[in-house]
Image (cartoon, rainbow, N blue to C red; front, side, top):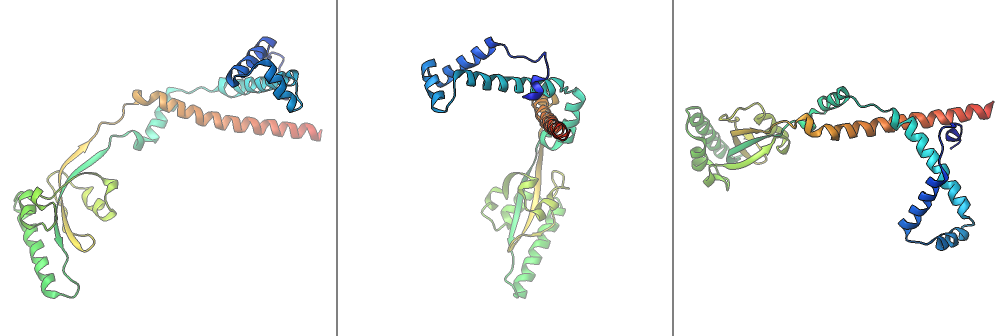
Length: 239
């Protein structure tokens, strides 16, 4: 407030204070008489309230002058933010997956293990020869999705477990993973399609980004400004 009072051009008229008092009464649905009574209970008068409102308005005006009015957000600032946060504005990629699910053999059962390995090898050979994955899933898969050709649906990479994500990410449509061990079973995943949404256009989020930059820069400038006021006050006290 003291800093605001030192700027001769920074003033608040009595008419502005009148409007602020009226607005306060309207907002709280009270008359002037009720306001005076409420203030009296706190040992205050209308004059005290007007002084407080004036000081608050001066401080707000000074802050606006020192921070808000000096902020300039350029298109280059917006473009830089957009590029640095590409993960927020790039279109999502989803993978349409099918699988063949084979239960793992019981531990220590050599015959069962050999049978599973033989089945996986046979499936892999059939895939390599070009047999339709859906048909192979219906024939060999041991999951509830077998009748649907191993249909799993669409997934984002982050929806998959780390080992499945690593196996699926490099694939193109029509390609399959090797047999993967996944919690008591083996899976072969097939990428039927990859859906890539369009990136969010800059112009459609320009105002949103501009507001975010404004908030960030305002906070930084305000922090620096308040620190400067405190440092200056400290120097004056020492002097």
